[in-house]
Length: 254
View 1 (cartoon, rainbow, N blue to C red):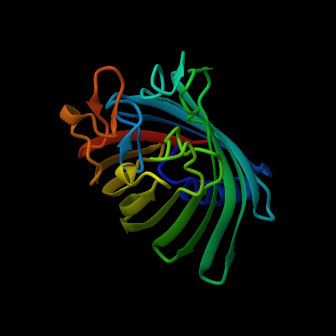
View 2: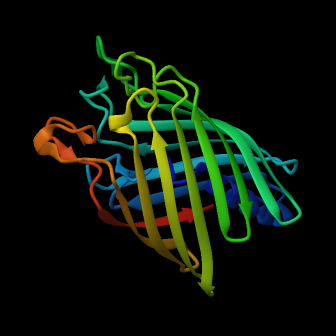
């Protein structure tokens, strides 16, 4: 989950690291952000509350990278694990360019520290991903290889292995320091059609030199009506995590 797009974030960090490498001969970079809501694939991970996030990356000049990223979350505790308040991601991959086409292939492990709950599937998840980029567009496919995807069970089986997420993203710099973005995605939960959905979003950001401010909108067709206990009502308060929402963030790379 981490940032909205691991591939986009890492490619951005590769560009950043390249610039740093030229000046400081360092392949390392870091990032930190504060957001009013942590939204991943159209679903709030913090029950609509703020999140503090950050990570570190190592990017070799060959295109190989490895990194880690973490954020507080609000949906896991007492639902999928006890004593949990954090998501911790580990990822690695290879990103490069061929002419005007960029590509990124890798794997990510989403880990939620805490104690397992008897009879409840673990939310810890492993995905492999491939993204292709051209001009302002990026097409990315993520494929779940762990037994369950974020703790979801199938209708007649525990396993939701081979769940997948396909997304198309665009980012366009329309003025110096200003960028607009758009996103649409389709989450398929294997053996669980009720939990599958589409999501979309738009945003605008401004690089102010010491960091970047952004305002985003996210929506989905996931049924989060909490009066009927639908899939994306998380926590003891039954809060709708799938509803339309606006959120703002400030991020800095170093």
